[in-house]
Image 1 (cartoon, rainbow, N blue to C red):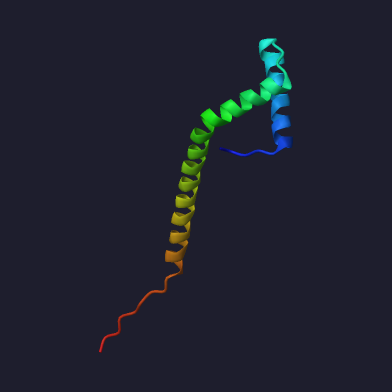
Image 2 (cartoon, rainbow, N blue to C red):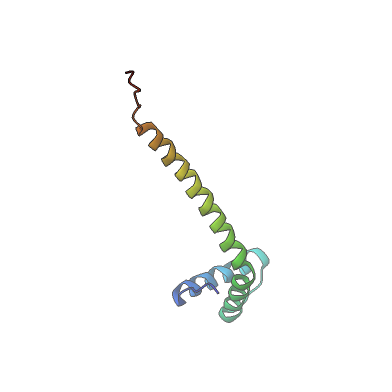
Length: 83
């Protein structure tokens, strides 16, 4: 389970409450907003986490390819001398 601080959860709950008020013209309490956050984190958190890992892997692979290209540029030519 993803862990968030009390302060973060309170901030998120306020945003959820504002969303319900502005977009749906509904009022929900702090507890209901926090329960919705817990549900959403539990249900969607793994999908979002896994996508973040996929994105990180792609970024790291891209950076490694760039580093590999830069290393090839640093290679010194090898001269073959005739006897």
